[in-house]
Image (cartoon, rainbow, N blue to C red):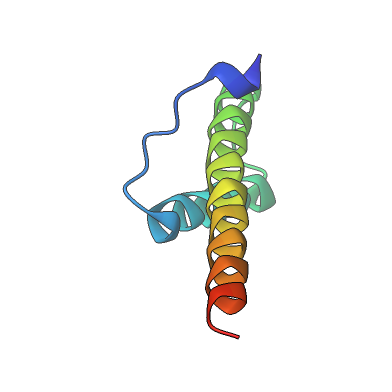
Amino acid sequence: MMENMENNYDNFEVAFDELKNIVKKFENNEITIEELINNYEQGMKAYSYCMKKLEDTQKKIKFIETNYE
């Protein structure tokens, strides 16, 4: 279900900042259950985007290393 959702982030930093802001809201404990669910969903989208970007970056680094050794 989550994997079909679009990730509309310009870059890693934007997604990571959103993820950090959502974590702060959770730590604050002053959100309703509806806000919790919505923020959790957004957090998972941001997390998924960040992980994909990190994996892609690792692949690029490995490719560069193997081509220039």
